[in-house]
Length: 391
Image (cartoon, rainbow, N blue to C red; front, side, top):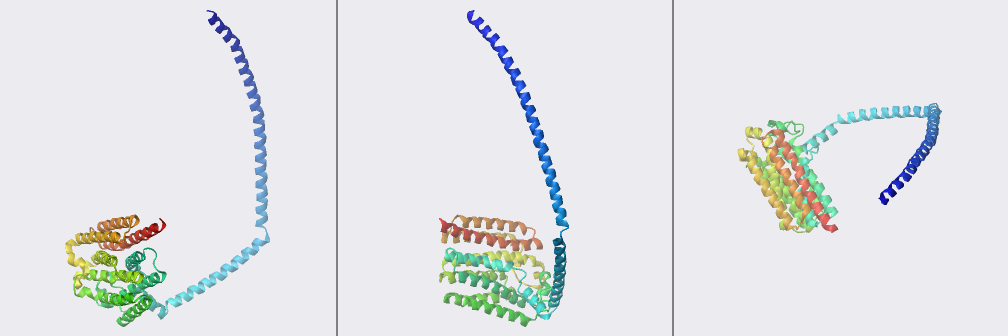
């Protein structure tokens, strides 16, 4: 009972104190916020005035600049310069137009068409296996001179191959829709000129090879024979695409020999891979001309394979992937290389999708897509050796 009364007294005494504290706190906070409100208003007024004065000063500065004589001078100089440039541009256009109408320029443009300088896909398809062979032979970055010789050699020999191809097909190209406007087919370039271009480019490529070792020089003779004979094979057998693969693939053992001064099993596996690869992608290319080739009697793997073309291309691509795996094992390559092989396999599957209906445009797109196939393989080799060198 006493404890209960004690609690009642304690509560009755504490409650008024709490009420008094609350009233005092309320009055204090009201006064505090009143002072703060006045301060906020003062600061806001000051900032607004500062912004107002800044804008006025900026406007005065802009007005000053707008009327300053230096800008009139700059405007006059700009107009003079523009006039001079306009005259120079007109003069250049006039001279360039005159140059374009000149016989040497027109002839050079025709030679560029003859060598497919405007269509680098062939250079790239020849370059990727060459670079792969160089990197594997060197187990990393190859000798700069060897790299220079083979990159420019690829450009020269592909261009020479186009010239001799058009020479061989000079009576055929005019009957094929895709090739009817080639300069030799239209008579804008003579057969003799095409042979001169082929001989000149081949000679330049051979001069480059003379900087390499004896083994490479000897192998270059076979390379020229393969390149020169390929265009004529479509008249004699149904496997000109295989012959093209051998012509393109020969650069791989040559490059390997130039870097390593020997030709190992790995070099021949790269050679075989290039033959399989070129047979697959050039068959896709031949599918574009299938109807025209049937009419004029030209032979190709697309005609030989007939309705089984897609299946056989798929089998060839599967053998190619298997060969690439063997190359990786022989060269003791690892993760990055096999990622490249995996990416290349996906591109091969995409190419099968493109040719499924045998439409001209899609077959040609499948052919072009092989540039990505070769590129990812080379990137895999490049990264593999780079990664190995840093661990």
